Length: 426
Image (cartoon, rainbow, N blue to C red):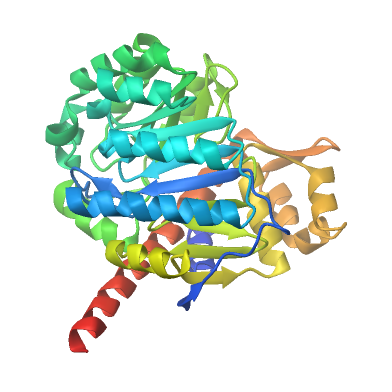
């Protein structure tokens, strides 16, 4: 990283940490859909067979009784969302491992289809679930896009990440992907670059497998993004995370992918037009269901409780499980919209002017001036687009943004622990 990039990195980390300073309290209920009508519904299934040390998402160890009760509460929350007038057309199911209980997931998607005018369905999974019974269930549930958490095909890295034993070797996962490849409109592989100990040769081999051997329909190559707490845990298993190779690794993978793929975001590449991995690109507003899910509606961010038992109790009592929220000022809303639009490589000037009644570029005058000085953007009159240099700057931007979200997730976990302590004391 250059001095300017390191300076930007430090500034963004502080800034996004402040932006994720939510107010705790509640319960808070979602607004009715009269003002906001997001296209995207996000559903979170937090259960995993094994908890990876690098992962900062809300996830808990699989427990059959707890998971069964969880799905029943989730179905109740989805009905409340429908009763409030929301009509999303896209559903994205993430985790955790959404396919950990296939029958319950099938029932969830069936319910979603009965409640909302769904046109597109995207589901995350792990490679060990690419077996006939699960794949057939997903096909019958009309899943359009299946996203598989691969991370890397390097066996040594998989062992250090704690994924080799529970989720399979690189060779096993290649065969599983071949088995699933032609069954869905889009099969995405989630990959991580710049892992501790990852060599250029290891990255090159991952690219060879994705591009030439598997000819996968879509690949998302994320930089390693962890919270401060998870970085400490990761050092024990994989070593210290350095940013030294991030830029050359990104430039290598971007140039390799460009030969056969179209970029749909700064790190998502598709052979053909299709669903993208980032539901927040097309529509920055979205509604979330499930423990640990986020919503963003009318400039307010909402976060559901991370406590599984409390989630069920809150849903049963009020139909909502929100325990934290943050109202963004107009400038913050405009900045968020710009960040997410350019995450998808370009933004329409007319759309953003209309949304902010002509104030959009006045609100972000200094930010766009800085981006032009840095050579990060070009303006063709109708759109603002990222330059190749700007694409890496946006990798820094999005890594720091999601790291800020991950730090907030740690706060939510601390909040859960504090609640449990208070309950014991009383």
